[in-house]
Length: 253
Image 1 (cartoon, one colour):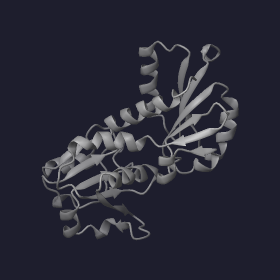
Image 2 (tube, helix red, strand yellow):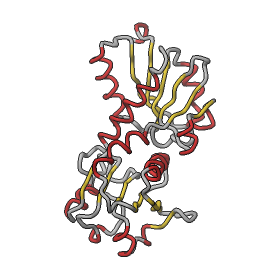
Image 3 (cartoon, rainbow, N blue to C red):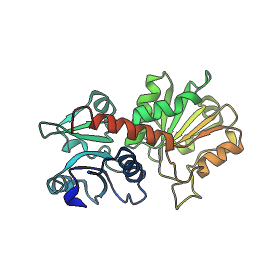
C-alpha cells in the first residue's frame, strides 16, 4: 500500500489507538476517491522523536496533533498562524511548499461552531476544567464571544485558575457554562468524571464535554440529571478536522 501512496497525513499523539481522526479521514478519502491518500496514527512516546518521524515519512503533507503534544510540539515548528500564536497551542501542522512546518489551531473553529447554537443570553461566565492545550483554544473562543472564564485545576496557578475545592455555590450559580477539557470519563474509564458539585447544576447550565467516546460521559449524564443542556465533542472534532483539511489544501499538495 505504501508504494502507491503519495500523500500521507496523520495524527501525532501518545497512546492514540482510539483515534477519531484516522477513521474520519480514511472514510473521507474513500468518499472522495483519493486512493493515493493515506492517514496514519503517529503514536510517539516522546516528542523529540518527531524530526526522525518526519525524515522517515517521505510523503507526509500534514498532521493533526492531540494529547499531550499540542504545546510540546511548538519548538519543532518553523512558523505559527496568528491564532495558534495567541493561543499557544497547535492541533494542525501543514508542510509548506518551502519545506517548513507551520502550526495552526482548528480546535477554536470546531468548538466555537459546535457550542454556538447552545449559548443563551445568560451564558456570561464559564468554567474550563483542565489547563492543557485544548483548554487554551476553548478559552480563546469564549473570550472572542465575550464570555468570561476561569480555569479549574487540581494545581491552580495564577489569577485565572481556581481549584476544584473552590467551586462554591456562589461560583456554580454564576458560571452557567462548564467545559470539560480533561480526559476524565473517556472510554474505557467511563465511570469517572471531574470532581465538581453536580448537585448545584440547574436547567440554566450548559455542559460541554470535549470527549466523544462514550457519547454521553458521566460528566454529561450528571448534568442532564440536573436539567442542564449537554453537548459532547463529536461535532467539534468533525468541524476541526474539516478545517484542518481546508488548511492542508489551501495550495495544491
